[in-house]
Image 1: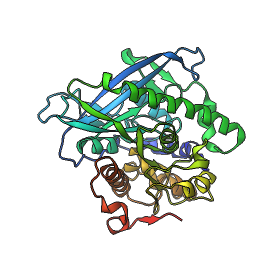
Image 2 (image 1 turned 135 degrees about the vertical axis):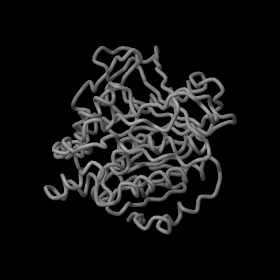
Image 3 (image 1 turned 90 degrees about the vertical axis):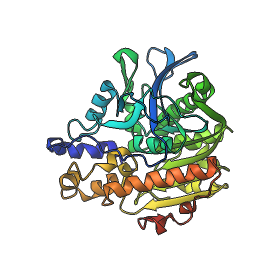
Image 4 (image 1 turned 90 degrees about the horizontal axis):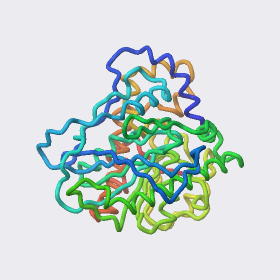
Length: 380
């Protein structure tokens, strides 16, 4: 596996690039405006195994949901200040990259109706905000998206009052460089167990934490994630029958699910270099998928093209900074696919998948996506 966090250190010169610096977020195209809210949860019955002080487990949850038209509430920031500062330190991109404003109104009144639910989990030592564009698109189509922050794993999780909790052990993040070594498998399985427990517990609590007027169907739920979040999605689906459909955006799979596969609908979108030889977990997991499943590769797309960051690469001049100096890092981290193209493909296929399997509506693009996006090829 490529240590993409380490590879990104080569981009440091790009921090000198001029404005516009704020990350580009595609405008949602669904029929509904969108709202968002942050919820702080504490589980008094579970001590946090990632917290050196073993305090009760705390989680910040962000809900993205369809809203009533005409809200005068302010547009939500991309990330709270403490999280934005930590992301700036994690990804050496231009200053101000994570100061963007979303298209969603903070605390807007929810749209009427009963809405399907989709959970989202980020990559290893990454952020709840990483796929904001996809989350807003899903919300504009009538879904409620529940995005979880990885307390003590993420670079920073900001709680009410400005309290910021950072990664508690640098070994967590380093494990991604060689995820299949015995030592790193132990670390990742430890993190995975916490992620799975968080997800199931939040789903249990969801009706009680929703904004007033937001009605949700929590009996059949979807989930998706990037990188380690994609593997988390598979693990959650194996452990909880309420999760009925999932999407893995370029993520390795660990734990028992890597050996058993799944019998539920599952979509895998991978980068150009991600295959069963490069990632042994895909060699065992993909052949064991027995429900509806597809594996597609995005031509000339690196690992970070599957999150919001990948939509601003050329705007920030990263192609000119990285590609001439280290073409291999460029290929695996970003690749030559266009900024807008990569974001459109990920958003389109993810939303089509959940439209099909949560709403029960036809989504022909899932069977022949290359008719709409020639960059998409069947995985082999």
